[in-house]
Amino acid sequence: MKFFIDTADLDEIREAESWGILSGVTTNPSLYAKIGGKLADFEGHMAKICELVGPDVPVSAESTAETTEDMIAEGRRLAAIAPNIVVKLPICEESLPATHQLAQEGIRVNMTLIFSATQAMLAARAGARYVSPFVGRFDDLGDTGVEHLMEITTCIKNYDWGWWADEGGCEIISASIRGPQHVVQAGLMGADIVTVPFGALKKCVHHVMTDRGLELFAADWEKVKAGA
Ligand code: G3P
Image 1 (tube, helix red, strand yellow):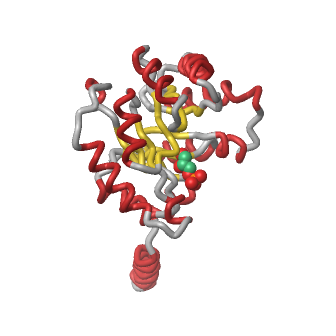
Image 2 (cartoon, rainbow, N blue to C red):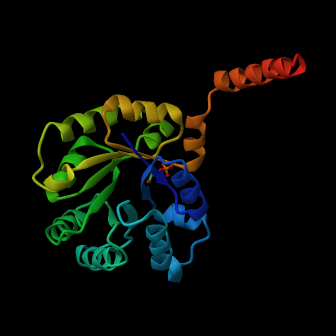
């Protein structure tokens, strides 16, 4: 499974990249607002992320256009920022034809706000390079996100959707991740990718027994040194 980071924060991306685990970056309007992003700087900021991670690492930049024509125009503009830009579009009637057109032009689309297997299959059929089911938002509702993720991964993996064959076809990005348990669930369900906020990514490194074990080793090493 590949790890993406779900953030627009350059420092977080830089640090995750230094761990040697980063295969991609996903952003959205909320994440850009969270870092205090300005409208006029949006494309420049996406360019900075692309430059930071390098040309082989996909960076999802979300379109906020509302019509098919505007989504196509914005998708082309975003894709022109850098070769590793992936255009993020929310699933809706307007975005399916936009995805289809952009895919025919060789522009990758990450179809987001996926909450059902039907949405995921339609996105893949239209030509989406990635589909992003939101796991955590189901759990926020008291529903069980992993069960929906299981349906989506099964339906997507059952077929060759006919697009992006040279890149392995449509990949599933398990999104809306709240913590390590969601990362494990994504792995168990066979998601290709998990996109994780930096805070949750850090939690994935740690375990209370690791911390306890480290303290024990350190204490015993002090004994060794004292006896030397
Ligand atoms: O990439 C978008 C998705 O991960 C958003 O997650 O935390 O806003 O539910 P969240």
